[in-house]
Amino acid sequence: MKALQYREIGAAPEVVEIPTPEPKPGEVLLKVTAAGVCHSDIAVMEWPAEGFPYKLPLTLGHEGAGTVAALGDGVTGVEVGESVAVYGPWGCGRCVKCAAGEENYCQRARELDINPPGLGSPGAIAEYLIVDDARHLVPLGKLDPVQTVPLTDAGLTPYHAIKKSLPKLTPGSTAVVIGTGGLGHVAVQLLRALTAVKVVALDVSEEKLDLARKVGAHEAFLSDEDAAEKVKDLTGGIGAQAVFDFVGVGPTVATAGACASVEADVTIVGIGGGTLPVGFGALPFEVSVQAPYWGSRDELIEVFDLARDGHIDVHVEQFSLEEAPQAYERLHAGRINGRAVILPNG
Image 1 (spheres, rainbow, N blue to C red):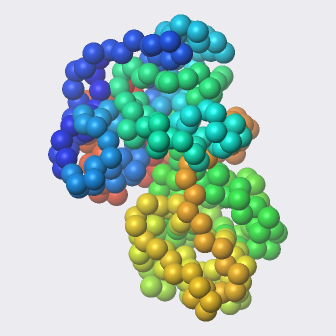
Image 2: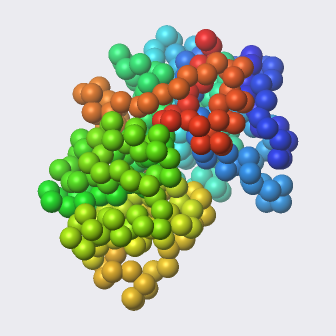
């Protein structure tokens, strides 16, 4: 089968021919319908050789959807031919967090060398994908896999972040979304669907700000040195009750902190390496700063329910498997508006 692999530190990913896997006992083989492209993959490919955590070559793609092609011995709960999406943050299935569906916070994953597809395990940008357990599959039903596959990360991650702040997102409050690309433009829609807050979008790209306006942002302006002051002006000098930074570099994290009101939540989702000092006087009183990771299995089901009800419409650009390297080039250059999706089987 064909797959997109990261094969050498510092090199571009390439499409290669590798053996088609066969499911072992307990495993499920998917014929991949769609696979998402994410900035996290670029971050992985920029890590230096020293301390690189995964074995190479690595098939990329941690957002996956497909049809069940074959079942390993003992698998129940799914049927051959069923359309499913993959819950990506795999865990041990037995610790207290996994028992609650929070496999994104599995307490034994590192110890047992359990890795998500595309982030340590073979990923979804391939014609076929092995899923380690049927519990990591969520039925799609009538949902379009191409439109839905980004929700397994670009929907689940912002949903998890926003859900934690819902008690503060009351009518009359303000939420700021920094970075309105793949995750951020979904976050805007989630905030509109789940709350009655004023949604303010910040980005360095006018094209992405236009997308934010189209999907529901009440205000949208450039993320620059004046952005926080504009947020303060919009809120009568109070600031925002919740700020979600989907970029996570130093300047955006600083902007996030400067936008926050007293008792606000600042959530740093992006993995750009920025940090926000916390301490008396560093931020308004009782500001909470958190850096969440992905989301739980039940939250993914809730995200799909929102999609079924028409509350989320992911802006998707489609690519063939052969075009996958170009999709990463465009993403790295900031020329993907929304989410790039690879169609490995046409």
